[in-house]
Image 1 (cartoon, one colour):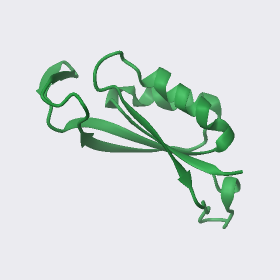
Image 2 (cartoon, one colour; image 1 turned 180 degrees about the vertical axis):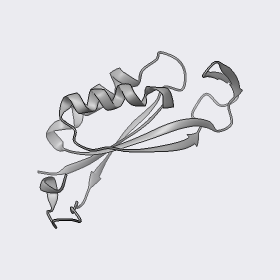
Image 3 (cartoon, helix red, strand yellow; image 1 turned 180 degrees about the horizontal axis):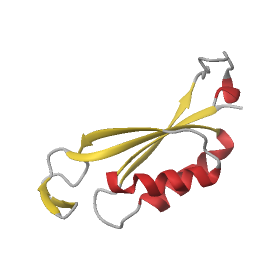
Length: 114
């Protein structure tokens, strides 16, 4: 079975909702990074935690999970539904192929490693 990396860039205050949605699907691990960036909304203002910002590089959170092929669509929908605010800058989801996965502790490979 092949593995996919699902990477989502979302608003930081949505992280807990996304984590709960993914945990509910049975996703057993995720990596979250604090990142900064912008998308199509450049030149517009955005409200974040009650303050208005000119868009240059906005705070975002990047979520990465590795899942089997059969879970990809459910993960995408869970992230989309839980991260959506209906406002500009809600984020993006990317899906990439994972060539190999190895669990460092045991040496397990493939879907056994996740």
